[in-house]
View 1 (cartoon, helix red, strand yellow):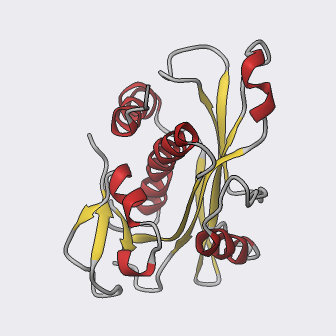
View 2 (cartoon, helix red, strand yellow):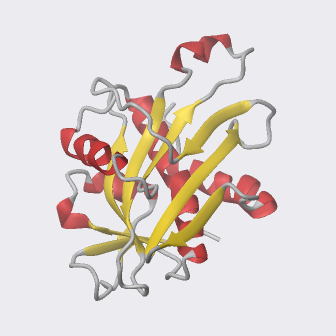
Length: 206
């Protein structure tokens, strides 16, 4: 049965973000006029009420396997941004519970990844400039899309701490995978002055 991507994104907000908050998982700091981002969080398994770690979200470097992420443009863009020391890439990795034997082969694999842009205009939203979604199997693609939706919560927290609009944007004509953004819940929106149209935005579902 195919995953319900939007349902799993909503479950993340209802059962994890709303009752728990971020509890230090996101740290935004400022040095020499630059914004620095650190993200590290361990997520429980779906439906986010079970015991056992399911995933880890982090800004530390992870390897994108080209057989898992066949779309070259976002993969290359993420690797390029990973070289910056300001936390401009975010990864979500599989971290199954030890007793889940059927999933051990996925341990440590990247489920989804993105790179982001923080504009010098302090009124501009956080923007995604590359989004890598798995394409090796349909189930992995759906899980990857849901995971990318979960990652948006962390970018919205970055926006909150940096006193920016509470949305995550994308200049959609620069992206090779518009369908992935739409599956996650990005929708057409008014283009901020710092960016170019057409512009899509993701906002918290609650």
